[in-house]
Length: 77
Image (tube, rainbow, N blue to C red; front, side, top):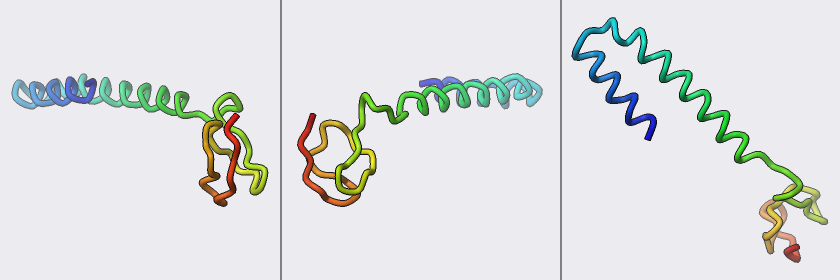
């Protein structure tokens, strides 16, 4: 949703004058960096969400029945 808003702001800035891009481009970059950081934290691996495969020792989701790395059968915990 935020990217659509900034796309519209950039379009308005181009129509009204390129000097408005001085404000919209840095705001868009800051917004994108914050959003990417939030997404990275959300996707982070933790021992609450993942376990180690007993065969290859790679991290897999707790609810997985098969290790995606080696194909070992797992018992969900």
